[in-house]
Amino acid sequence: MPTLTVNYNQLSYAGTFVKPAFDLLGGKPPGGGLYDVFSPFGIGLHSISEEGAMNSPGSLAINIYLASLGSFKLKLDGVEWKVINFNDEVIPKFPDVLKAAADWLRSSVSNFSFKSHVFIYNGHCAMSESNSKEFLLSLGHKSPLILGEELGNGLIHNWFSDELGASIQFMLDRSTPVKNGLFVQFIIISDKDDVDYQVLSEKGYGILLEELKALGLDIEGEQEIK
Image (tube, rainbow, N blue to C red; front, side, top):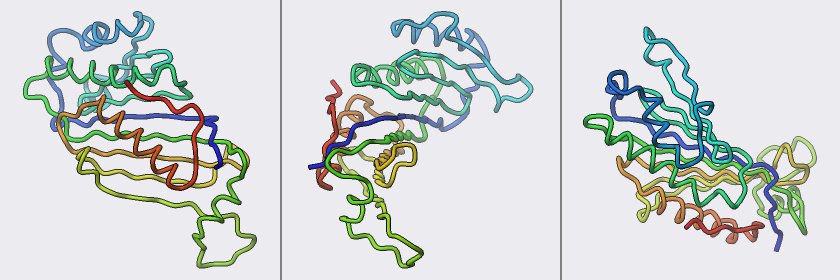
């Protein structure tokens, strides 16, 4: 069975608010509040930066650099978090980062609620025992046009998970930066206000591994999120 080795990866999260969190404009500066939230993750004052202008509320944002745990951005209408080229050691801490931020928002903003949560994983992987052309051709997804040598076509699977209460999309295709490699994308979208980041991480990662194995692929360094 071919094994995937992740050469490049990225995990991003976007949490959109039901309504703008204007409470953050008054009282204790949001940057100070976020410093308290993320100080257990090793940040310092140098980790915090601000952008935007008060006469343009939509441009206001506070950025927190979390080193190996990525970067976090707070805006009046939502939060964003992204981590690039992470290793297995830091994966179990990801749910803690998001939960800490969500708990602080709920305690700092009156009548706060999330409208949606979107998680996107992208991975560019090298392959053992095969290559992208050989593997994708074996899937049998033919193009309706013959424009030259067939290099194989990717696939997209969509479904709704009752267990997670979220829609899921899985995509597999040729990788551009990794020669003869595969590109894997996995997206989870939840329209719930309150999600359990730990459960969503564990179950979501488990579904990704199951999907890959159902296609006849293993992934190097499988990591449990606990």
